[in-house]
Length: 92
Image (cartoon, rainbow, N blue to C red; front, side, top):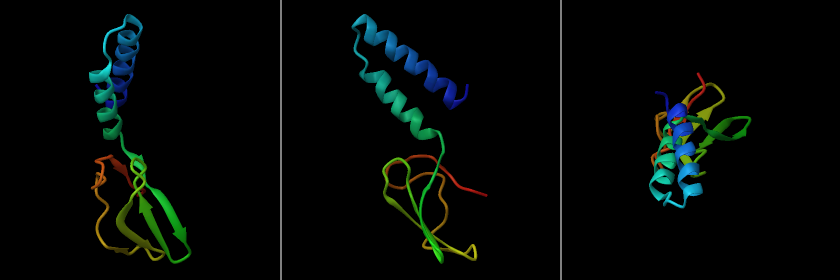
């Protein structure tokens, strides 16, 4: 089962719990956890000579600067945000 399929199922469970008056806290935590596992592209702040990347989840800068010539400075493109754990999708 993919993360997207699991997310759909948990959302359906959460709606059913809510409609029946049952607590939804556990399913909401599961939904947030699954959403963080689905890779999202970084947000970019660009100028002609460099691109700074932000996490799409927490909006904090990721310590990666990409220069116009393709060189990276300050780190590597991690699979996850070091602040919030959001899965990252990097352009190839």
